[in-house]
Length: 262
Image 1: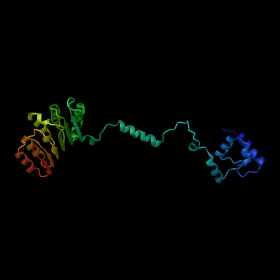
Image 2 (image 1 turned 30 degrees about the vertical axis):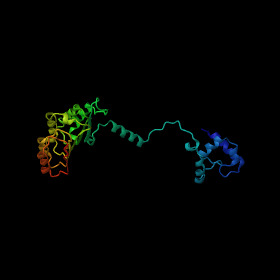
Image 3 (image 1 turned 90 degrees about the vertical axis):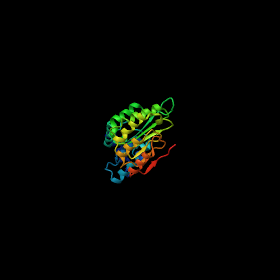
Image 4 (image 1 turned 60 degrees about the vertical axis):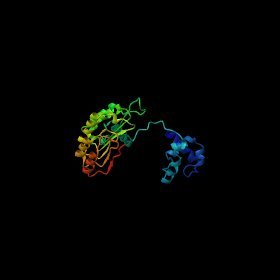
């Protein structure tokens, strides 16, 4: 920024004064403030000697800093090595396909008809993609339907596709009556039997207000007697006391059995 002539000129003025200890006031007044600042930043001693450590430290606080002057640098700030590595890690994670199977263990499907419910339904294509690609990872399945028979029949169609599953918790929920009760037994029972036969580790089942019958409960006990802990089948008119005793006698780990009959 400044040539050696500027520095020599400044030093000549200082020698003429000969009244300095390090940076004299008289010499500093005869030179421009810009040159004074340059000399302070570069730690140039006016009596043409190398400044010691104390003098150098005394000059450092007068250096220009962004925080004190408010000046903003227009130079491009390049990311550090750690910043680049972090960005590469985030971008690679975003492009990596989802392989965390815990995301697909719990699925809740809602089936509603626009004419009778203001709630939005789970998209049918999404349901099919989950069953097709992640059926073996499903452990908790909940089917929530409205009062329309079409919704309950769609839920039965989903149950019939859960072949390669190891479901532990199954819930059939009706937000309003009737729904599953309007589905014929010929449609509902075979769909439910698919889950009872293929899932060997069912522990919790909620099938209130459904046309489940005694033969289907016997199949449930035959395949899941060691794991079943909770069974809610309130308001199931096709279940007799014999079917209830079959579940209570053979399921030794059963902790809760709901048998409210309306």
